[in-house]
Amino acid sequence: MTHAQQSSPREERRAAGKRLREQVSRESHAEWRPTPQRDPLAVLQVGEAGRLGELVSLRRERMRADPFAFLRGAAAVMAADLEGIPVPGIPVQACGDCHVGNFGVYRSPEGQTLFDINDFDETLWNVDFTVDVKRLAASIALAALPRGETKARRAARAGVRAYREHMRRSEEHTSELQSRE
Image (cartoon, rainbow, N blue to C red; front, side, top):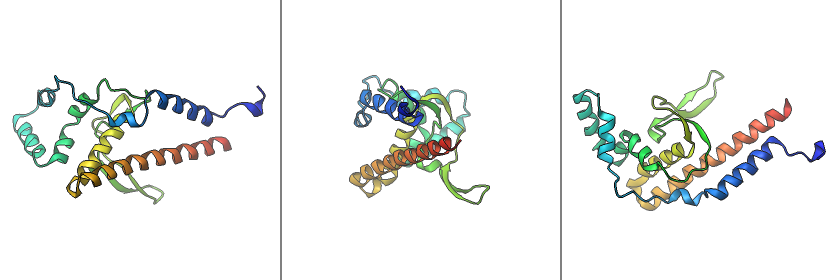
């Protein structure tokens, strides 16, 4: 193979991504069936061990407010629910609590306005990137649910699409910068 025929790192990454998508399609991420032994309360109780009783009571009270509040307090339940499902196998340092309530608008040192996550107290290493994306999608759907289930589904799909498109643009920008070096 001549130098001109060699594939670029970007082309190699895209090909690898397509191979992974053949194994775990985008559509397969919409499929989930709870296991018969699923016990969200037991998962929450494990996380409460060693915490102050009054704080546990406060946490439970806050989680009862609405479905979104429950999602916020139940990261461990969602993690347990996602165990064992097919994943593409792209491990990252996951936020662990990626939901719309943990995002905000910030100003960079250069004066640019940024929209980014602001809560990293539950990060996890070597977790498939889809865990954070699914938690984000679930939070978008729950935030939109008062407007109806159809709008909630559309909002979640739009959020995931925006994530995918932003990641693609970021990859293209990174590849462009690397090609200049």
